[in-house]
Image (cartoon, rainbow, N blue to C red; front, side):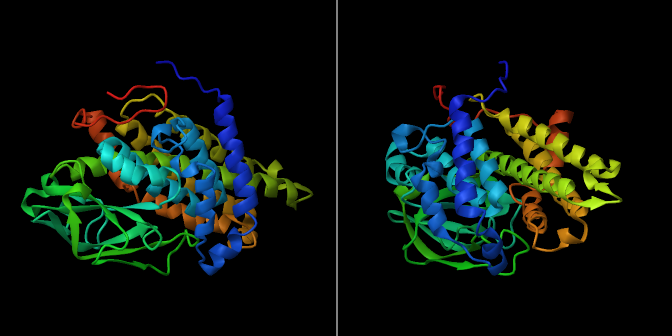
Length: 397
């Protein structure tokens, strides 16, 4: 299928609306919010009012029915404002809502997905544990069968929106001896007895976003809260992470673009040796590398917009875009010189924020191994029991 890189009128409108939102609601305040570690959930409510919290969800489930390029542009623009606001798109939409759309029953979609897509409820995704990150099959959290449902115990960590979310897509094992085949997915609601949350402090970056713990202490979960079948949780988690990686990749393109924008401004304003620093060849080299990496990242991200599973392509996009955003932030600070070391300029925040994305949704080292295994023929994508719900304009298979 040929790829058309020309934006549609609808896609341009999404980009412009998101950009105007960032300029009005985030840009004037973010330096202070970041410095003080303040989280402002009222901004999330405004995102919901604009339909952003259900952007790629079909209209029949309360969403905007946007395609994946529109969703990517939204993530890109929000991260140009600050990573904390793209993270909401990643966990609420990418990791939770799209998983419900793909794997939930019709009753589950109506109960949880519709209010999430409308922005009435905030959702998150709880997989990582104190002793489990990349090795997601080794979950210590357990789900014991009891009359009418399950009893969940365990702890999750590094959970975005932990203290703000209404809904939690939680993964626990019904049989740890079966490793990934024992992992099962559940949708929990705030207020369930035994479910408590807490905030993590002292983060390097994304200080305007909430990150925390989710504690499960004999949480009684009705059977109808199970998403998919017993033992399908690992498949659900991996398919959700495919979606999450897409949002992270798109956001990283936005962060690199923010680094380039700031560097271009400074390169024109700052003078040394009687001319703009943008005239100096080695500054041009850093500018050129930023621009090149952004265009490559953007093209990789847009490959998803064809209604097909794209685990391999999204892995490449996430790997490239996040690594490039770190380098772009480093170069932006270098271009700014001593000023880049101060929060008087935004590039030091960009660097702090960029580092998280080369860790979450699969470390760069994991993506290196994934791509090597594809190239060597050790890995191939097999059809899921439940095929991904495609972009608008395609029928679900």
